[in-house]
Amino acid sequence: MRHLAFCLLAVPLFSQAMDEATFRGDPRKLAGSCADRARLLRPKDAKMLAEYGRAFLTAGERTKAEDCFQVARIESPKDADVHRLIAVAWLRAGQRAEALKAIAEMQIADPKAKNAFNRAAVNLEDFGLAKEADALMERAWILDPSDWQNCVAFGRSCLRKARREAAAKWFARASQAKPQEERMWNAIALAYADHGAEPS
Image: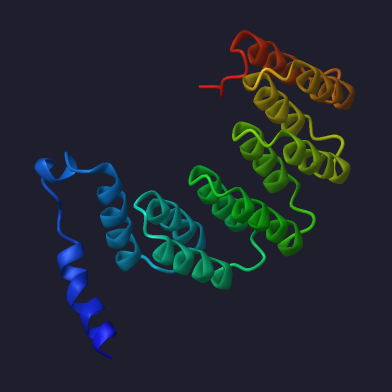
């Protein structure tokens, strides 16, 4: 009861603006402070909760992060993207085992979420987990071999990591899926032109 009373008293305090001097402070502490404010103002959006958790991990507040992740899973247990966002938070925090556990939970929560699998494969690739990224992308591709956009997105991430052979494989699959699609050819052209950087 006392905790609830504190939370109710904290809402007006946390809803006030901060001044510039405050935002010049320690970035880690600011991440945690701003996540606290956001969580108190809108605590029921599962994707936002996963992102608050990422901020808490950055701030070194693992317990708060894990609480946010747990509530996010409860709010949207079958939303694969929620699990992916939790995995990204762990990846950014350098916690590989926790990230891979979240990826496994994502696949169980929605075994047909090809787009979430693709985004997670790109995330894994960007964090240097090529073997795991390749396996997850294969699963996404099996679910829909005609999805050239996912193939190109993963090929781009392979180029970013200088994995040209892997990129070639995925670009070839994209071209086989839609050989008459000008947007696909343009996307591959830009991927090579930009050395795999995300499109602007």
